[in-house]
Length: 63
Image (cartoon, rainbow, N blue to C red; front, side, top):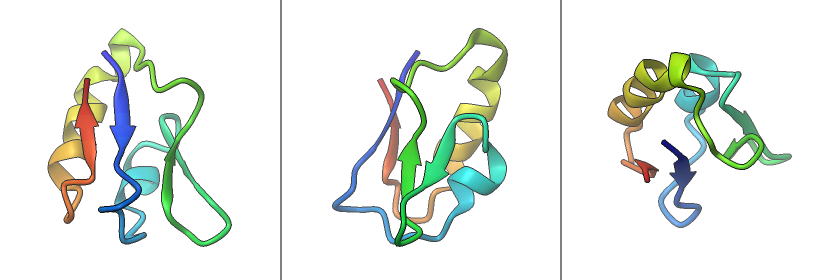
């Protein structure tokens, strides 16, 4: 499983990196970014799904 953030949709609410700092970070303007290559470890898949469900702009998707 991999995750991706659509930078056109992200508004910088920060829920992704608050809920899963091991999977997401923020840039210098506070917009979410996927850490590393976006591959989600098996033990973090539930967390990734929760983050996707909690993004107000639906900017995060599971690939």
